[in-house]
Amino acid sequence: MSFSQPIPYGRQQITEADIAAVTDALRADYLTQGPKVAEFEQKFAEYVGAQYAVAVSNGTAALHLCALALHVQPGQRVITTPITFVASANCVRYCGGEVHFADIDPATALIDLQAVRRLLESHPAGHFHGLIPVDFGGLAVDLEAARQLCDEFGLWLLEDSCHAPGGSFRDSAGREQRCGNGQFADLAIFSFHPVKHIATGEGGMITTNRLDLYQELLLLRTHGITRDPDLMERHDGGWYMEMQELGYNYRMPDILCALGVSQLAQAPAGLARRRALAARYDAAFAELPAVRPLAGSPGHAYHLYVVRVADRKGLYDFLRTRQIFAQVHYIPVHTMPYYQGLGWQPGDFPQAEAYYAECLSLPLFPSLTDAEQDYVVASVREFV
Ligand SMILES: *Cc1c(COP(=O)(O)O)cnc(C)c1O
Image 1 (cartoon, rainbow, N blue to C red):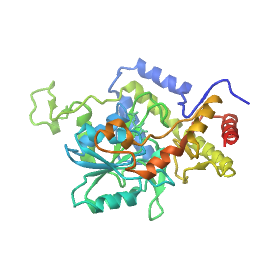
Image 2: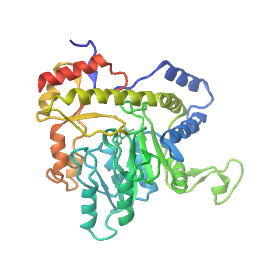
Image 3: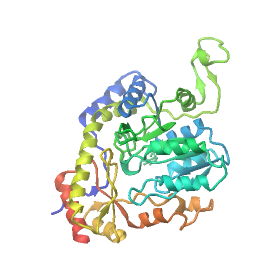
């Protein structure tokens, strides 16, 4: 069996409804800051259960604005995971801060909060300023535990939830807590890059329950300019606006927010399909001990389906010969030449490096058919 089209690890799904939504936005009066921005923000906030949402140009811009709103200063130290996309760490560098890492839990590939605690305890009070955990692959970090740790040591908490819109975990009282709902983290960020759950080409979102941070983010997103007379120091007339601090143009255009609204309406169905596909992989690999999937959970959002195999490179190359384009998530951030230039070295985070040697993300996206998935499983089985 084979397929005429190559099978990638992730792929966006654009429907006729999406195309109609964008066409309508193009015919409307606003191309950039129009009604679709507020609509997308409001609906997204509802979807994740947060009070406020701010749409921005992409997930990296979201991280940068969060680092600015949290007042990351040159020399301040912020902890993140080595197993993430580099942007989670880079946002600290944009503000001149120092990136530190804590190793991962090998069962989940999430940052190990015990390792974070050991790091915090081995330094004087006030040494670290913030924590950026990542809901890696779509599995939610235990943010309740992360919040307790941050409160104990005086850190802010920024959740990188690019992989987990719609994901959740159960808190210690048994309540479902959605990723990005702002119950525990000060801020959370999302990306609408085509491989993510909700695709707008480029796009991002910040969610929070903190009004002070929300207002700060609105300013920073548009050059630090306000047009709200209540917030101004003086008021010269109808034309008047005020630049109050150094901000950026990180706006998400109305055209893309229209696509976001339409994509968001399909997100629950996409999430259900991702979970069904993950369950099919789980069942298939239960009989293949050489293939070890990362731990699951009922609230898993399954951006990625990651397995660990001894001969990862061999499997990756073999699948390519079958037109299956699996991917590796991620090359540990601390081993990137840029971060090695800052003093980090291979060997610093053994669990992350051992994970990297064995991990492979298999194709997982809502339009993946059962037959395509069976072909992927058969190919993996043939190799191992
Ligand atoms: C995709 C991603 C980002 C960056 O988002 P962009 O929209 O591509 O800038 C940041 N963090 C994680 C974990 C991501 O997967």
